[in-house]
Image (cartoon, rainbow, N blue to C red; front, side, top):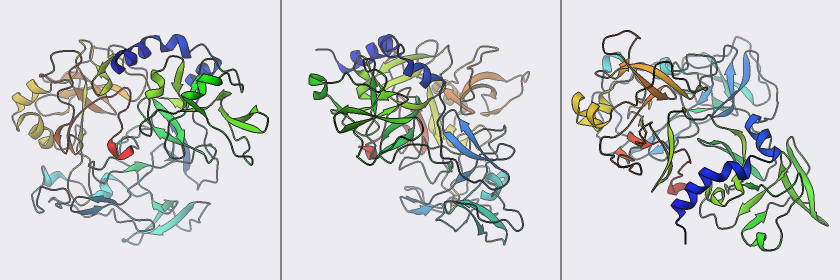
Length: 452
């Protein structure tokens, strides 16, 4: 009996031969997520991001975010609909929202700290702006008018430097211990009510409306099924109600007289009956079967490797060592991110080396990049870092090191990992690495127990 680990590795090695032959694979690799069109206020556009899918942006490409209220361990932070609270107040002490830290501790680099509204400038509505569809105008505490979408007040991020950046927040990391983080806002995908789209590292994953993954196989024809008899012991066709009608790239075909099955881009859709948790990718371990995406995610750099570990498929550097990303959200009332190079590095230094720079660099060294290396996408980039300070450096600086970065955040390996399968620093830090710490970069996403 093969272990699940071996089955997963075989899937990585041979799946291309099984799933790339159909025309569906070509359409998927070139496809972008379709979205519901609607009226937009002047100065707003839709940009299709490679990780987040379609997002709203200003006319100059600044992504728009919301800040939903979130219950934390000792209170809550964020906003409720129609009530913007991200203000010009500068918080220099922590709020004590995440135990075991008491409120009132001075924050790192407090004298340089920006206000919430400086980090996330409100998307101000012009004088006389009128509601358009789901777009409304709300009153800010300072008397200005602010755009809202679906009642959520909208903001930009100073982390977004280029048009189309989505660096101020993400829909991928919003777990129970990540703090009240910002989330990019976008139009709804063009999907039937039975389905949902979930952001993952591999792409925009299609699931049922209650979260169960959707699959296709290499044997089916266009809007025609070959999954019958014994095949149905493991795979459940996703049937459509009698009143359903095609929408966008979603079509229906008659599986048998009077019974209609959904197809996406011509491929019949199924559920894997032994999936144990929602958003699962277990069915893609079965040769010839695969998950379905509205659009595929960006590929990691060519010099990285994809490898199997006890927590799933993760990325490794050119030597096969597991690659980790650092995650950090501070405990002030406005819950600012502290995972990017220009943020205070005291948080990272505390968990990587007990605030000892040399120990930190030895324990969690940066992943070096070759001169001139490129990934071909905007998710994986290179940047110059001063390893002593953790801050961005300029090319030519005496201490500058060229390193790989994920979403403009440097990535690392761990000195304690000796074998390729080692992931000994996964969940290293506060609250299992979710609040302030390191997580292995999963090429095949790992979903927490909250999703089971």
